[in-house]
Image 1 (cartoon, rainbow, N blue to C red):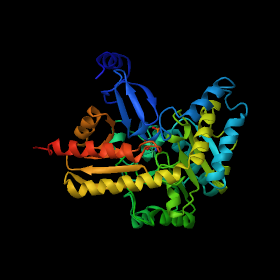
Image 2: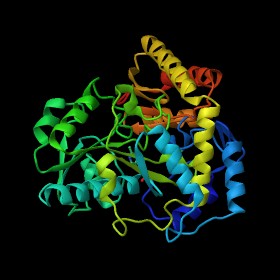
Image 3: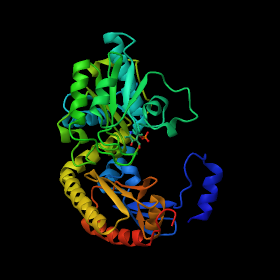
Image 4: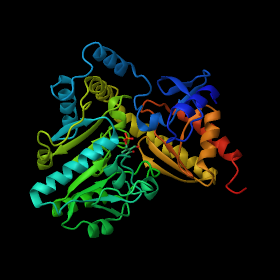
Amino acid sequence: MSDAWLERADQSLLGNYYPARLTLVRGEGCRAFDDAGRSFLDLIGGIAVNSLGHCHPAVVRAIREQCGTLMHVSNLYRNPWSVRLAEELAARVPGSRAFFCNSGAEANEAAIKLARRHAHFKCGASRHVVVSAEGSFHGRTFAALTATGQPKYREGFEPLVPGFRYVPFGDTVALEAAVGDDVCAVLLEPIQGESGVRVPPPGYLTAAADLCRRTGALLVLDEVQTGLGRTGTFLACEAEGVLPDVVTLSKSLGGGLPLGAMLARGEAAAAFVPGTHASTFGGNPVSCAAALAFLETLDSEKLLDRVRETGDWFMGELWELAARQPKIAGVRGRGLLVAVDLTVPAKAVALAAEERGYLVNAVQEQTLRFAPPFIVTRGELSDFLKIFSEILVSTPSAGA
Ligand SMILES: Cc1ncc(COP(=O)(O)O)c(C=O)c1O
């Protein structure tokens, strides 16, 4: 524990985050280093951000070069890097056009505004309801927070934004019942990340897409956490062959720099006209250059294949461990977005792992989340699994 930094952070930063035990000062590949020089295998990757690992040379090179060329111009002017990035994204999400911002919440905020405006001019203002799922997480700005189907995050911030409706995640019948002619958009994560990597039943996204097509609501998929290769396909919804009207991205996109994107396809894209939405830093040349390097590396290093192979193998190993270790109650996920349900407190396990040199995330009371860099090796994960097994043996059950 770095006491000096802890005390200074306590006094200088607002208290909205749980106090961290570690002060990290350097990163390289899959490893992060603290101020005492200790090395950690990073299995949460800055919450699914550092997908190429820390300081990937291609991203660092692109950022360095861009910083010496042009750093910021605003959207009063065009810059080639944001156009190139939008083109690269359209090559992967057919027919899409991009709005760039700085974070996942802003991307969702933009998507909600786009959906409202699209419906407003097509059908009138009464068609303004956004349907989202219980247990979802869409960010902390007001509309994204309102869409977030977890009351604990909304508490104390009321009144929230009007016009939101919630349905149980994965329940097609409930979704059908909730989408009336007042609904402008259905907003879903293909796999709910923050509530513990909850995978919906097969066919759920397809049913949502069909429903939206029938009713004229837009299907907005929040792929902030699942997108950009994390689950082994460029977008997680590709696993079901679904192409949404709108998709939001962030996290991995900037290769470690803050960057968000809202991609809109077809008629939905026309809802934003000059003056309807903006972000001063949106399409910032440095973030876009980093994102171009990220996408190029994703292809050149064939990382989608690697995510699928490593992810399948890792989940298989976790299931094998679960067969011998009753403190593992379940394993879920896809690609390198994986959760393990425990019968013991996840925080205690995460702290013990930290002591042994591994960064893992206690995403829920009894659930660990893993979102390692795509370049993590089987060897690194094997070493972790041995330590994880030992930690579970020595972690007392709740109430013991
Ligand atoms: C699915 C999803 N959407 C939106 C967000 C919010 O992103 P940000 O924290 O960049 O605003 C997150 C963050 O964890 C997320 O997982």
